[in-house]
Image: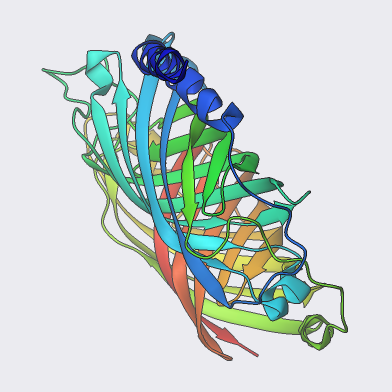
Length: 386
């Protein structure tokens, strides 16, 4: 009898591996395991958090210029290496158990002109405990990506999505974790992934693809999260305040842009914001910015008409929201221009930023300005806080 059971188990496992990774993971999930209910959790400050994941999805046609990507399927393999913060102080402040670290990914597109992509990104993943076994998680990543087959006017004219090997890589994900043993979790969810060069070189419509993900995650101490009773949160109370940020930003030289028939030599500007922090992880802001564009316009396409349409100095006002976790701030703004702008710009813009707090009065980081689904530029910035 024992031999028959072993043969059946081996047959099921081999069949699952050969035909579908998902079936294999479901088999592991449904197999007997010993995870007794946790009655009392020993408090720890952090634990190792790693994972291996696979995903499949499809590229989105988000603008008519990339109609050729319709029907493109994707396969990705991802590895996470990081730590999960599990202390009582962290939970009382943020009401989550965040995981942060490095994500390495390989992405393959089944249309040859898009090639393959390799990315290294910082990730932040808040985890919300629902039951002793079930957890809800969200994840954001930001990093750099190397793509193998950029646009070439002779050899790869079909690729209007990206035109440089080095690109910025962003991901937003959501899903669920299920504890399958003391140290292992089954993790499944969906992701929206994007990469582009943030307007450095054109064409640059970007690659957007949505995927379904599944994999196994490891926790060094315990996959089940601690149960803390809610206590007085002096940290959150101290975080509610109003402050002013002011700073400078700089955009380095960019490549040729067909709409301008030229390129940006550089851009430099000033900005200021009034921010009200409404808790440990949320803040709302009013923002103003102005910058100078130094453009190099070529001479063979509507020279006089185009030069009269170029605004060297641009300014705008915006409202924003900041997501704050420790020394990191993820910001989003929606703004409108208050000065004359080129007619090929819409009247509004978005800005996405990532800042790191060096001290109570100094921050550094990067930001990306965009118009709808078209990136304008990426900048480096220094911020002083009052």
